[in-house]
Length: 64
Image (cartoon, rainbow, N blue to C red; front, side, top):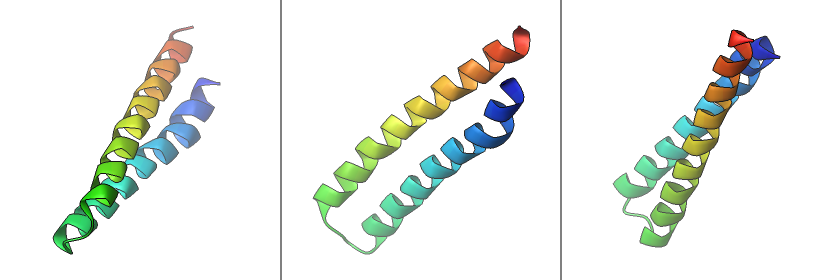
């Protein structure tokens, strides 16, 4: 289980965080809607929380 979390699920979660961050930066540079920027920021924070939980589960599973 630890290998699946650390080799498949965690990179997907980190990639999702990076993608939303990049979309937010592009929106800001283009002068896009502040509402879209706010939604992207909230989504990024949620995805970061999920990525941290997955990381902690992988570390916990490796220790077992």
